[in-house]
Image 1 (tube, rainbow, N blue to C red):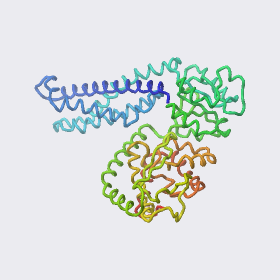
Image 2: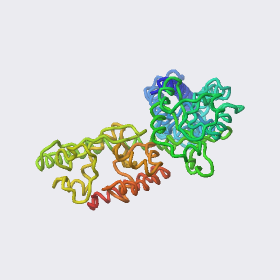
Image 3: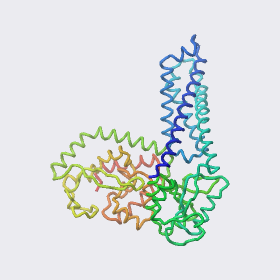
Length: 475
């Protein structure tokens, strides 16, 4: 793991958070001054501010605004900031913040003052935007200027040593305004070799992980030629996550689908990040908030059902109540999935990975019922709470099957962009898979899901999952 990248990112995030906290407090203070001036009361501002609801509101609203900024995704990607997106994000936060202030505080003012609703809403939004954006602008301007002047360029490696890779590296390194990355070497992955690459530097792929760690590499860059040349995409996808970096692609007409809906640098080389999901930061944060809320609620409300299933599993066959197995999740990293045991103990005693087939003799009587209504999946709410899974996402597979699928479908590692889910579009439309061929067929739905990621899509999948559970159409 590249600790330098993490430290730089964390320091920058702290700077934005502290600045937002200060400027938000100043915005609320300015609004309170205006509110005091508009009140027909015989008291000084000091006396007015000593009122508990005033100074208490100052603290509460500042914290609410900070939570709002996080929810809107402002702190997700602090190193690669879009100034246009920053303006839009601040405007949205200002409007929502003004509505919060009004409905939680100003609405309690006397009736005649409510006729000035729009004036106060507009003023609150303006105060928040002016103060907060001013602080953000100062930090972002410093960061962007350093990026353009190449004083804050992050190291990047180019995958491949062909003429296309060399041309792309030269374009990036010779831009009039830097993009924040600087190609420091090429990675020899076989295939065509242009000796001119040696002017920058060439390393063997076997030493790439160590090189990334020693040189604080933050980006791995692919050309369409490298992507279509039988490259092991999973290897570089996992490495990008391990070094807290990005896997970037320079799309051409044949790979432009990778860039669908993704943001890129307008003035620089149009590199798109294929190691991150095609959703906004705000959607990702809202999705995670829903995951945590629903998981906590489910673990509490379904605890009697958990206890009943645990007793049934224990009485039906020998063995533990819970079944644990290693699966691949976000970034291709392994995690332990938890389910109610639906098979006999030591179902894979010989150590060979097997898929479940129809009428599998290893499934117990209670296990068959659990799988029919998918009740065996319920303990995965704990995986969701831990951040290893989501309510909705691609189906997580074991490494043995994931590698076999990736050999036949090179795009399979794209699933590592997001957390795997308790349910998925593939599970709703296809159900459990009893062979690698069926896993590949189900994969089609998960890949489509990646390109249509949205909260509305998740809600549709959850509703269909509930219908599947209630009707007992699980396998």
